[in-house]
Length: 291
Image (cartoon, rainbow, N blue to C red):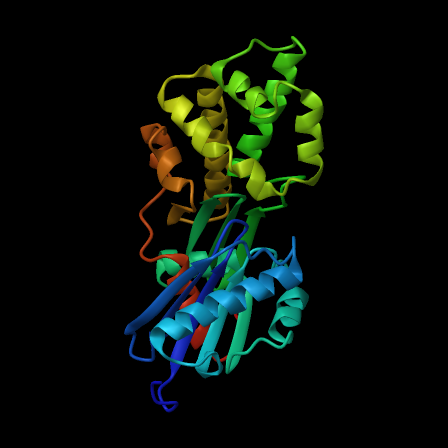
């Protein structure tokens, strides 16, 4: 084991599809990284905490240190109020010290190096977030049922809905609708039963197939991609109207969707300076929670 006298900082990025961890020393040296399953505390509080502890433990083991030596900064999907952050911080996590905030905050901190700027996140979910003169601003991010426009989950949900409409003869069939219905043995009842319990990440799991077909020119797939881009562009425009000048497009779908984008869309965004895990590490180094 390394010396207990050394300070070690843990950054956690916990999202709807995966949880990532990174450990650095006080002087910035990278010690280890690890990755695990979903960690959205809104969808499964206890399960998300267990995943975070497991992934942190894997990273700590790789770094040959104990989890109780880690000063942790956790950026988590589902942290929407200070009360939720407080509940996580006082849930008995095995770290020396823990600060908790949203995955949006850590992504923004990483993207802009801790200075003012905004992000549009497109992954399983979607949202826009910004820091403006130290104050935080959020747009969208209202969850899969009422929001997440431009996200992978909504793209998947729309695709399944179109497949059922095609089955009923209310839309023209496309290769994508045929492919979706085939997964359910061309029985809408199977699709409906699946949808009753499927979390957002299961809807987003259809996105790789949508993107493959979009690259082949399949018309429904292309429409879904362009609708997602329009929704993400609207989030960027919303930030600009509120005075945010530097905006990054980030998230698991960012690179894929940008390959379909117009120059006008791409003009909204600049490249991020660092990833959300670096933002989580900035949070871990703070003396107090972010305002």
